[in-house]
Figure 1 (cartoon, helix red, strand yellow):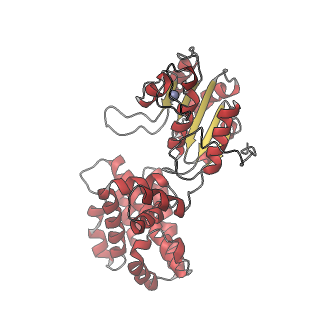
Figure 2 (tube, rainbow, N blue to C red):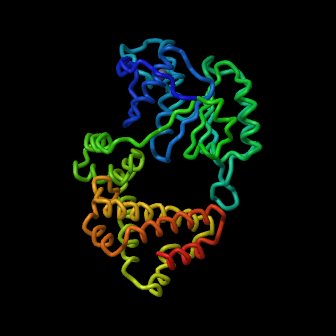
Figure 3 (cartoon, rainbow, N blue to C red):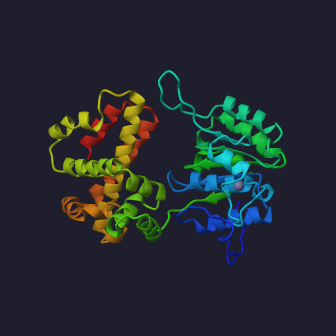
Length: 358
Ligand SMILES: [Zn+2]
């Protein structure tokens, strides 16, 4: 399903105060749907992590459920969500009785996340949705990482999508819609979240008091994902960890294989479990991949698109040492290594194999 055309002249900024960076089309569409009462029974919000899916879901759901019109002694303003009524108050506390979030559960023994969303979780959701709404309004279910549903869980959810109950809304969030069955996708209104422009993220951070140059660097680093830019602006250690990782990777380019192998224990500390090692390595490979991407962009004289522009002089040096073909090969090898990780290959073996082929 494509997003229906809407009248973009309609401006809802007086009625909605959603603190969202970018995604103007999606905001227009959802706000228009609330105002006109034209809601779908199921939505699929698809886009990379930290792009704004959860934030927009929260604004959408709390505005949809807001009971401002029913509020005694209401103030003059009329912005949704009002943050005053019984619904908004409960929503803010995470206690709204008509909102259900389905997330990947934690494994009680290991403390790490389970791999999938189980059929038991979907069945529990279905039994909750079958009950009457507490506040005589909509009931909303949000399934995060919907692509992680097992086949059984997805098939079970399909029944709910095929026979929607009135005033029940399902919102599926996914960073990889290709892993969802087509039967599920076809029953949802899909909204695709695209990267937010660098200028919008920069202005947003600058308005929050961040110096313009740093704001611009963080916007580049986020590659259009406001959540990442914001997190790094609020947590200096997160930013520093990222910068250190870039420096370490660039250093690997200038040392021999024996020295590289000595770095393995720094790349993956041995004191953590197998699953944590895999996650950490995936985080690092994501950064390595972005550096190789930048080096290829420098080869193409497209420096304006660099992610790690704050480190331009170092990147230029390393770019000179490599041919475009060898960089493309490294990019391929990193992708293969990340694929190994999804197949549960030992992270240490996976990284050793990659270091040989850097
Ligand atoms: Zn309210």
